Amino acid sequence: MKLYKLLAFSFLLATLTSCTFTENIYINDNGTGKFSVDMDGSALMSMAGDQLGAQLGAGKKNDIDSTFTFKQLFEAKKDSIAKLSPEVQKEIKKLENFVVTTKMSSEKKQLLMTLATDFKNVNELQDILQTASTMQKLEGGANASPLGSGFGDNNSKLNYFYDGKKFTRKAVIDKQKLAEKVKDTAADMSKMVYASSNYIVKYHFPKKIKKVSNPDALFSDDRKSITIQYSFTDYMDNPDKLNFDVEFEK
Image (cartoon, rainbow, N blue to C red):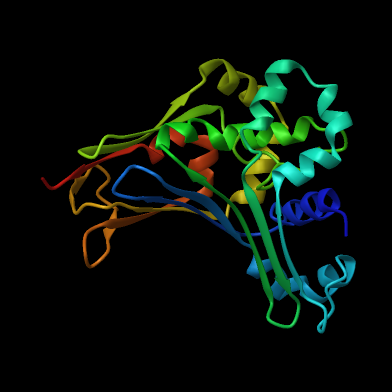
């Protein structure tokens, strides 16, 4: 199956039922690390796994286990990308080193997708999820946003900060875009689609955590990791609700 077809169809499925999205960040001692967003659509497979598996060529004895980079995808879509503005092309290029993994099994009722990349500094991740939504600008890419139609385009700019003493996740709402969204009738449909989905952040640090500004944060046993769960509706409609600061022990 062509990469673009698999990407477009697979992430379209993510908009059809309740899913769990998990944003992971692993930071090493030297500030480098790994970023990923995982989508678990196994609930969809439980309801219609056989039919969906057949459409994607994943029968009970022929599951899908696909891994590719966006660099490969962009090579296949280079003619379409060349028609975009220089600004959009620059944005899309930020995704070049991201790896997309899709695992689908009708028999196991499993549908897992991951978008991941390494980074040298968390500053490289500024607004990376919104950048991912620019995939829809590609020819035939209406549903080819890396994590589902509309994902990452929640009318905000997301920024990360880490200096060894403090970590900050901050989404700043674009009031102009928010006003336009209020007038958009498709926004109500999005709310229905994602009403039963969850958005989880799991961050792992090289130092013990002293405190977190979000009272709902759960700590790992070694206090170097936190997990916070939100409703996906909050992610889409109130992105600043996902803002928080982390302070570390000296």
